[in-house]
Length: 377
Length: 77
Image (cartoon, rainbow over the protein chains, first blue to last red):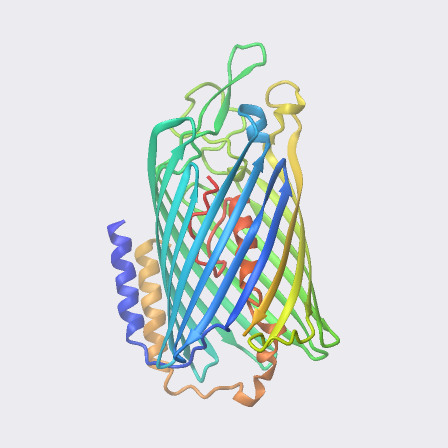
């Protein structure tokens, strides 16, 4: 961990030497969003509020308040625990500054629920080069979390997280913009869910038993994404993105996203998108271990299994007529709907019965809604 | 790639940029960039909505990072 800290300082020192060139502060705006996720026996909904405001021409501040209200009867919960409800509340404060034309950003996020508290501090820097055709950005985040357990007040564990980001955005032609993002994430501490169990074969009547998961206490991941956005002559845009991911737990993943954006008349913007995701399982994942304590590390989290997901997205934005309020320049109403399908290759639905290890493979659909109002002032 | 290798690659990229940025003639002139000012070309037109959907992905998938967001504790263990 000490070596990574030095790496960040090295990068910062190099970036600080760059000449000051162009950057733009984010717009003054406010967003009020209602979100809802419904799938796999889990319903999560709640609000999110974001406000951004510039002052003195070179500074910008932002604040975000976000709530997840969770009602969970997921397959994990139904097989080894009881349905539950809980709430997670998150607050963020951000500060952006233009120095010359270089943009510096600071952000702090606090998230709390009854058994997990997370803190994250971030620093980002972006710089335009080559006549403003290229934007280079660097970022670093430090996170420190506390993991607790609802039914065990003595249980308390920590997680330290570090993120290192590098981004490159390039105007290639008058119609084409491309981007490259690379991020390293390291975690150290208690990384598994304190409630989740793995199952293993035994001599009981049903043929298997459960024991708590055991994860490694460190994880390092690398992700690289390449994206392109192209302006079509009849005023529409297409975009595509590919991301490759790999980590020290043995998970390799691929993500492909395609999207199309079409304005209609002056008030409307419509979007359609498709996203494909696949991953291989963690090295220490198994749906059914051969015996108790079969190996040092044990996981049966379906998010660490081999699976694919596909998502179809639809979105509409409507620009409202002038509201007559002097401080609102324009405002929009937006609705986005995503339909996702998750298909697991080595995670079995034990609720459906069958000999251990031959139960049907698990799959489910999820609906995701985002309804929000945005105002620029 | 090892972390030491990543470190060196990033440093080399920054130094190359420093060496070359003063002499590059922009091949897309400022007056040819009006398409990028169109709202439909904005990479993140709706930041509050993008942050939410990135959170959904991170909670439901093993992969993370390189999404352009700040990451952070999602409490989704």
